[in-house]
Amino acid sequence: MKWCANAGAVGRTAALHAWHSGGPLEHVWRRLARAGLAGAGSVLLLAACGGPPASAPPPVAQAPTTAAEGGSSAAPPVARTRVRAAYAIADGMVAPMWLALSAGLWQQHGLDVELSLITGTPNVMAALINNDVQFVQSAGDSGLRIQARDPDVVALLNPSRTSPHRLLAAPAIERVEDLRGRRIGVAAIGDGGYVLTSKALQQLGFNPEREVLWVPLGTGSRSEFLAALAAGAIDATLLTPPGDLLAIQQGAHVLFNYADLGLPFAGLPVYTYRRTLEQRRSIVEAFVAGLIDGIRLFKADPARGKEILTQRMALSDPEILEWTYESLRGPRMSERPFLDLEQNRAIVDALVADEPELQAIQLSRVLDNSILEDLDRRGYLASP
Image (cartoon, rainbow, N blue to C red; front, side, top):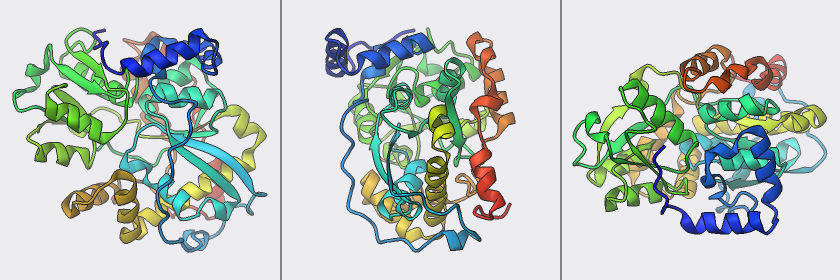
């Protein structure tokens, strides 16, 4: 694998200092090493995995009680409980989480949720495994790799149905073939963007470990990817709305749409750890119910949906905001976010030739629809 070692050097130095000094990251690294995750490289610790959460933006207007809008109700609210959650990338598909927090939807179910960004799937999963957070939303493709090694990482739901990803390239990259020997930006080696881009390149006849140069930027920030592309620090990167349209406005162009390649898409599932699911099931149900409320509110109320995108993604251009919102509110974001066993099986089958360790994964164990099924029986989910 080719890797630009100069990217994120400061973050790696700080992380490795904590490791060598026996700091709080040491036990996370050791547990991940035992689970086989240390192979993600030193970029595993680029993000502030144990750091303070990002400060919340000003809240949007209080949402109405959404349980009634869903048809029936979830279980009675739990006693007021504080939990921590994180997401791996500031993507529009995280908007239901942002709304659940800012509109007080989780509070209606008895939860005080501390929500933060921990960039990259390896980093956010490290926090989950270590119980620094109890819930995470992260890329499903790279999540499967982690679940193959640690089957106690459990997916609960997946609101994303189809891929919005497009590979944006600098003007000098006129064709897909021109990517050979070029630099592709990702947040971290092993994260969702890396996995999706690797799969796409394989489909297009590349050896992604040898024929391109991976540049880990150490951030999930859209602005950092756009800046790196505009400055010529990278030649291409995989983007979702609004990043794709912003890159086009800066002079980049689309090399391919991921959805056109016919590849299975794992989306951005929400995960917990088995100890939480088994020991605190009512808390898990409350968290999922609040997130369902967030999905419903985002799709039903364009003003609120656009407001949270403006706040969390710093969108001020009306065209960019409209593009982003409309790309999410349709069938791409599901109000019945059940995990698709067959879709995940297809992903595993597509990857297993190059990653034989995936043969060990027990999808029936790591994909758990039982919380959604309980809510559905009580009429809390939208009708099929």
